[in-house]
Image (cartoon, rainbow, N blue to C red; front, side, top):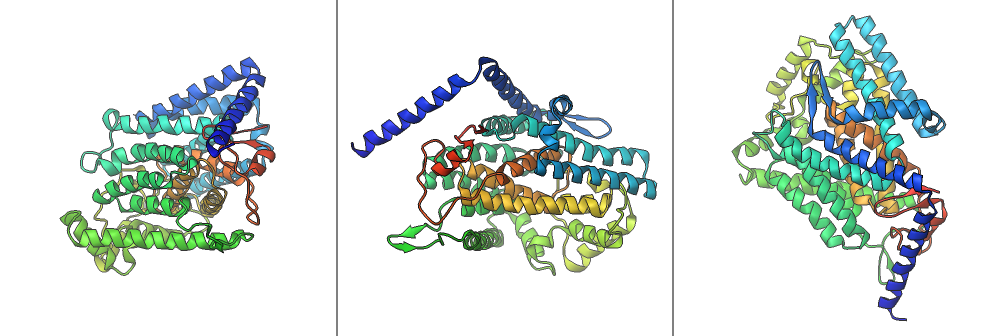
Length: 474
């Protein structure tokens, strides 16, 4: 039998197996599964709307909040009997408790107190909803992310941000367009079309570079370096990557990260210095690259001021949306003395009313105290672990997962936890626990690759069924 006929037989056998499994599922379960898929699509599309009153209430939370409450009441053991989920829930509860204690001690205004507590409560509720809706269900995750991308693009017309008209790519089209390209790259990745997979990310990185969205360029280049087989397993009989030692492979990934970061830095610096990106980008790049703290911290004086605020009160925070003029003065002095002026516009957010921090981690530490900081440090650690595991296992959705996880690492350190961002954070935390539940492959021998999701056959025997759009626990 030639290779072509063998491939056709393999595909036919896989399709027959999938049809047999589908037929074995009771009809009412299939219907409920389809209803869940439709609900996930509506949750994604609801991202085009946001209700603004005392705070901001994103459209998806109109669906996620009642869903989480109903299912948590019906099946609390699904959260409480799972070690990873139980740990997250305990951390969230401890963070909320310290926030309440801090606000009482600091005598925070009632409105700020309510907003600070609501941020933590809605983050927890959104995460619980995502766990019940799409944990261990990649098909539903893809549906949610695809329609979420459409909702994100539609939001530029329905409820655009204040900075959209001046910077439409950064504060409008970039998240949705990139998500669609990431989903396309997964389709290409499973078929080993690595050049086209990398090209899809490279196109978005090129647009982001032209629009002077430098952090996004870095995230996309890191994704490409970690996902694509930049370093082949072997050339002829020469083994390039270590077989039986995952730690050495992790070291190779670390080297690729450093190389990709330097490439992003050189590309943006050279193009900005040449004036290709415009005079504003040229001036901004020069100021930030020649200050005391380098280009990474050069445009983030609020992060440095947040560190000082944490140092001033490391155990108990300053309270929900605490306002202290000395930190605003400190940021202005820092911008004048070290040239760390925030010349790039930032998305208007509620956090700017209080002590500057511009970070999930520092924002929680400044507002609540050390427990909030420990929670986000824990999330940062498991996000890095999940990123490495996604690269080593090479899942069908690895390009998408690595992009989301690298973005989440950046947001954890350098972005405030706003209204829509907390929904993304809740989804990503659910995704992290899914990835960490997978076992690393045995690199000591060549694994047979299954057509069902193109994963080693040992994964199919381990109790999970993979495909590009779905996997579930048997």
